[in-house]
Image (cartoon, rainbow, N blue to C red; front, side, top):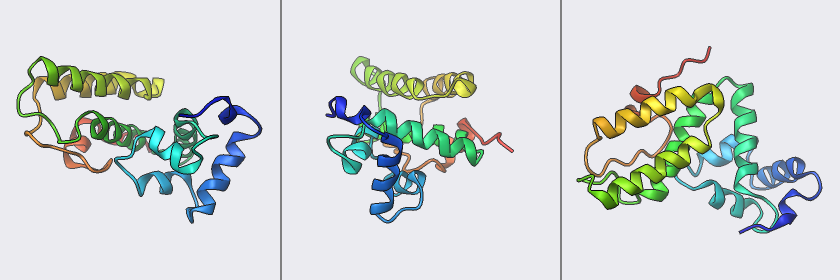
Length: 156
């Protein structure tokens, strides 16, 4: 867990220096090489004491906006949240315990959803609950076939 040092100095410069030190030309490329890693895990890999998960997401969002790939980023964030909450994939039965795990993943996803995508994310989450995917479903990246049907690209 990071302390207040993550906000000291020019954290954006520090973030991108760390990405380049690891051989990536963008934060997106770094994150996509680890599609199921949480934002906290990505931050810890980049700087265990001075990079925060929210900073990683901020950088990812800025890159996605520049490339008109915000929907893809949003799908990728769902992949990260599901991997953390449901490491064995989608549960075969949505009993109370599993429903809570799914709800937590969807709620976390919502907290990292830009305002422009909130309605689409709410609808996609409702769809997942109304018609659950097959037991064991584990999307491994933002281009998962089911995710593409739930949240297709609309950016031009």
